[in-house]
Length: 379
Image: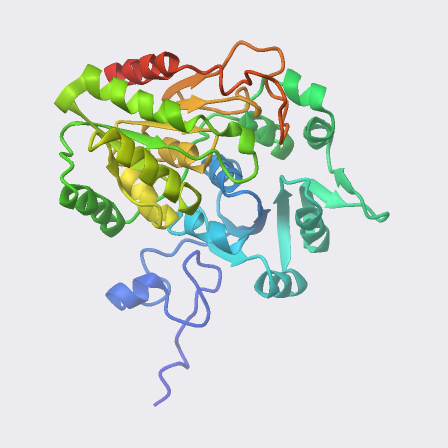
């Protein structure tokens, strides 16, 4: 007997995959249409490739999109390294890595809306390739250059072209992106979902390293990001800061040194110099594991970098050091404070600076220490 003859497939269900059982059939053996049936009303494509921090902060738009355009199947194209930031996201139906997979989908499918908020040529070209009723953000013109699809997109494009406009801007990234997409700003928030197993793995590592999770935990990310070298604070000041904090707080707080592969040698030097006053959690962790470690922090000190975005997505307090990049564009959601020098040349976006002392050198240990203490008092 052919059991498939009278078997219905809910092709329009949010959980329909196609080449394998959906999560609910796998878990509970239910059939279409079950109590979890959630029919989709359209297809939305988001293109956001670069950089990882930007991918994560763009996730803030997802809760708003779900309210304004309910029932959309959300497909997100991003680079392979950023997939881990979007995994397990309840607002995203599918994640496509930039490459052959994405190009095949663009060739075969039709979307109701395409949102590309990146004025990079590759992102704009992907948006131009997509067969969609409405394109929002950036596309490539017939002449081959990137253009905005609406006045708000043109404003953001010009900020990227003219330094003085970038410097004068006082709106956050999320406010600007919402204006381009025609979305309200009410309800914007980071969406980065760890599993219970991932959360427990982070806690387990810290406990095995002797960290008392009941104490105040201060995470310090010592990197500056690969693209903007000038965002890096001074190694000697990280050392002085740790020594000052331990003298002030004693055994009531634990300090974690956090970094990626680029910070490995620096963190080893700092750890050696502070002689046990900070716990080096390692620099070879995945982004999701770093997120699980940051989740246990009370406050994270960071530059304008991916760990800052991760901390905000975990609802943790932050102290953020700014120099050449825009502090106005960063939304802290009431969870921290920004530390920067009083200089007219801030927000220069220069790769190399000949100012002595420069903006990062003018951020003192006491400025940072006091900011951390204030955030601890609010936790």
